[in-house]
Image (cartoon, rainbow over all chains, first blue to last red; front, top):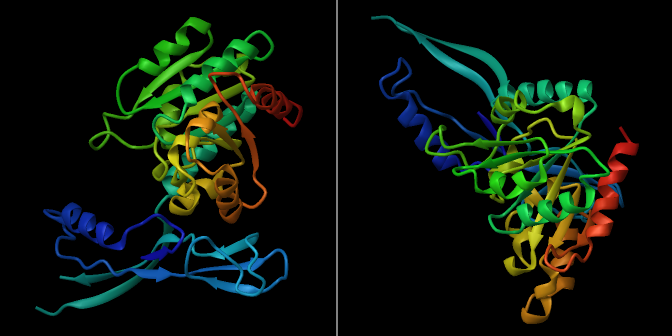
Length: 85
Length: 225
C-alpha cells in the first residue's frame, strides 16, 4: 500500500486493523507492506518545488504557504503478492 | 508442496468506493439544481445554533434543506423541526460502533426523504469531529467549517487537513472574545498558514454578528449554479 503523508492514516493502526480483519479469512497471516509517501508541492509564489515533511506545509524556497500539492495524498493498494497453493 | 508467489498490480484507491458514491450524490444534486454544503466542526462549535439563526433569516427567501448527521439521537433535528423545512436525520450508530463522520453512502441513505427538487441549498451538518469528515467526500459543492473561539488558537496547526479543505470558515462565538485569552490574530495567522487567504466570517449565533455576511454568502451560491 502507498500511504501519503497528508492522509490521516496512522500506519500502526492500519496494520493492527488489517491483522484483525484478516483473521479467519484466506488472507490470515498476510503481511501488509506500507510505503509512506512524503508530500511534495510547488509554491504558487516562487515556483520552487519542495518536499514537505512537516505541518504547516511551507515552501522551502521562500517560506510561502500557498502550495500546489501534487504528492502525499495517496491511499492506494498498489499490488498484491499471492501464493498458489 | 511447491508454491509460487505471483505479484499482481492493483493500483486501487482505498476510498474509490466512497468517491464514486460521492460523485453519484453530486449528480443527483446537480440534476435537482440543489447546491450542497458540507458543514464541519468540532462537537459544540455551534453548527446547529448557526443553522437556527440562518433559518430564521432565510427560510422565507431561500428554499433550504438540512441533512443532520449525528452518532446518536435526533436532538439536532428536533431543534430545527420548528422551521418546517425539509429535514432528515442520519444516525451513524448502525455502523462499526458509531461512525465519527458522514460518508457518501450514509448521505445517500437520507436523500430519499428529501424533496431535492424543492431545495435550493442543502446543508449537510456533519458529525462533530475535526479529523475524519475531511477524508470523506459526500457529494458537496463546498465545505464550510464552523470554528469557535473557545477551541484555542492552535487547532489549524493540529488538524490541518480539515482546515485546508474548507472553502469558508465561520469563526463563531466571537461574543465571548472579551472573556477569553483567545488571540484572534494568532488564530487567523495559523489559519492562513494551512489555508492561505481562505474566506472567513466572524460570527456569533448569540448576538447575530456576522450573520448578514454569512447569509449573503449563502445567497450568492445560487448565482453561481
